[in-house]
Image 1: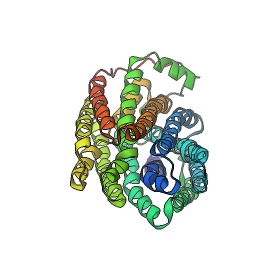
Image 2 (image 1 turned 30 degrees about the vertical axis):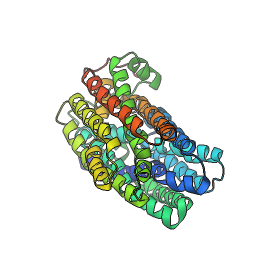
Image 3 (image 1 turned 135 degrees about the vertical axis):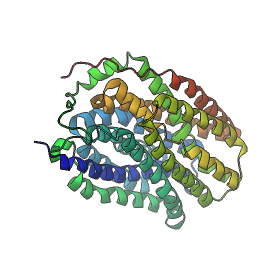
Length: 413
């Protein structure tokens, strides 16, 4: 028996998921702010620190398919609990690290896995499980939560690094992740059926979604589809040009040009504010316009912004760049997630999007590492920014080539 009045519980689930994504985004973005304090405290090279960040981004990506598989079978609640607990543990261990291998393990791999469990794939699963209508809006809200995490945590982490050191900042992040665990345990639910409801916007007159097939069957179909490879390639470029390069190296780039660390972190937070606006707007637009066209516009705009970044080195100029670039920093997530669901089915979306997101993080990991290498070899980030701009412009054409027709679904288990 379904109670239509309980369909609104989906918004409670959205609120819990937003809080988890906020903290996860803060933990994931913190290394970009802590590069300079860590470098000054330990004497480790920029390339070595960038390598640890790259490992974290890579594990963040490879956690996506694993998270998708877990989400499709266990549901969001246990995955969220496990991810937050692991996140807290990784931050405590990071605060105690004394050797580069510990940085690679705790600050990189374990933190990447933990935040990957509570990331974009989580948002996709929740949106598709709980919402038949307003799915694009919910995806936009989740994307905006990631932006808000950056907006809230980057200045806070930068301030904490100055006042209590980068180790103290890591402990504070651990405490925030641990504080969410009771709330998730008490209020989070896996499906609308757990509260005797239907997905928001679905009525008994509409057919209920069928049981999902196995992950292997889903991916067997996806890997033979050109749409999957185009989505994965464009999202690879998205990762390389957003949190891989800009998210990791924007603050060091600003500091290299004589800008105070706190000012640079504040500028990155401004980017997060604009990203909050842009991603919410992108979710609204995804419900109304062709997602392929939106992606082409976003990538083209991003590419042009990056081509100008090497020549922008003053605080006002960087603030202007942060406003423009922030508008589409992760605005690509709602249309990409919608295309995945439309092409491969809503109940297969977490599995397929997990692998698409994995491609995103492979791009991010490579860009984070190569950005550090480029800086050590050339003394700056100009070459890295110019190459990233060209890649983003190439993604414009690839986005328009994605076919929106549904891929034949595999048989259910």
